[in-house]
Image 1 (tube, rainbow, N blue to C red):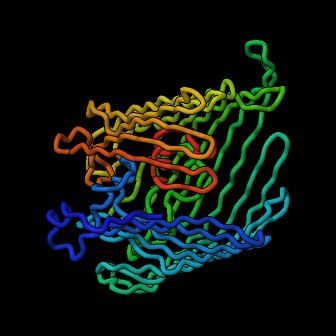
Image 2: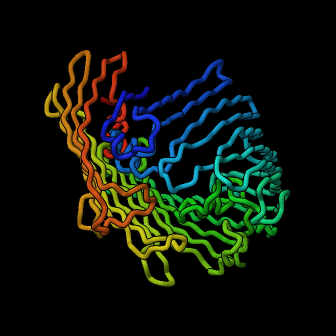
Amino acid sequence: GGTWMGSDDRYARERPDASDDSRWLANVRQNGLFEQRWRSRIDYSRVSDVDYFKDLNTSNLDTKRQTSLLQLGSLDYLGDQWLIGLELQEFQSLADDLDNDYQKLPQITARYRSENTPFNIAPIFLSQYSYFDSNDDVVTGQRVYMEGGAVYPMLWQYGFLNSTAKYRYLEYELTDNGQLGDDSPSAGSALASLDGGLFFERSTSLAGKPLLQTLEPRAYYLISEYDDQSTQPDFDSAELTFTYNQLFRDTRFSGRDRVDDANRLSLGLTTRYISAEDGREYLSASVGQIFYLRDRRVRLNPEDTALDQSSSEMAGEVNFTPNKRLNLRSSLVWDPDSGNMNAGSAYASYQRADNALFNVGYSYRRPVNLVDSDTVTEQAHLSAYYPVNNRWSVFGAVNFSVEGSTSVEDMVGIEYDSCCWRVRLLYLRYIDTASSQDPDFTDPSLERRYSTQVQVLLKGMGGFGSRVTDLLEDMIRGFDERDY
């Protein structure tokens, strides 16, 4: 899909240095599976200029805040035990003052997929080759990542214990690496882990309904060697945000540019209330914490000092589904040393039989140490999709900044649905955050922008205005075009 404007006089006046005043958007998305073995994916977007989304596009605030557009193509072979993948990826920068992200041209991955049958040793093997290029004057080159080892899973009715041992190896061949001083850095680290849990259960009841309550303690011990990686670049990695799921991961980084060191113990506890009649889960609640037995020396930035905290924050999450229509969920990250809640969220969603949707939510986040800001991000969310009758529906959403006492983004719209076609009219307001990834909504200089959008869908044939669907799915939790 895409759009094209032959001539934009306003853009020509504001950007006299532009060689062409025509403006366009190209977008291709494809997912395919053929012969049950081959899987393909294309996600390609490109615009004529860096101001296109700000001036013309019909997307929401998250898209306006993007600093780059993804251009990706991949082809995977799905064998019985092997996954072989080829991926090409690059980005188009949407900010004049920001560097382009690295291009992966190509990335080739081979992974052995074990069945993990209880009481059988399962091999671990992963090999990945990546070539990173850039249009900017930065470090580029090749990266090879490999890991090999074995896992021994044990499973009983009352619990499980998984033992893992593997070795991770990382090697580069770089150009323009004057800042780091080594054109062929490498690193390796052995890793071992024990992941075990117990299942306790008892029969109970609530409001006359027979229930099964479980208590599931879990312990995860991880140890991995330290290897100096101060001369390695950072092509595609980041430090992961701490959540409950982070307790049981074997790395604190995304990407493949760091093999981190560790000596830590994670403890978690989960309880569930499950229907004794049909097995439906009404409630689950989890809480946990990591205890560090030594400092973590591997950092994304080689100049950063080691992490010396003796324990992590405490993380918890709750999910409550009292019936098939209502869902309540909450998460919390609390720092016991400072007594501060560093992150938290609470959401409620209700969906009626006629597909009416209602959502209310709240989120809170303190800035991480990596961000040079002490502004707390606190937002409230309301959204709804309401069928008035068989033909007409109305919908709307608002994201409200509590610290800024203003609406960050809101939209309202109306829909008409006939037997053969559907049309939507939508009005959107949002604050222009100037491509900031961590905007300060208390800043009075931020401008508010407006957009009116129309979508026409011919049932069974497609239509135009597909970004309206993307907007509804982004801003109204639970909305899925396939259901409407």
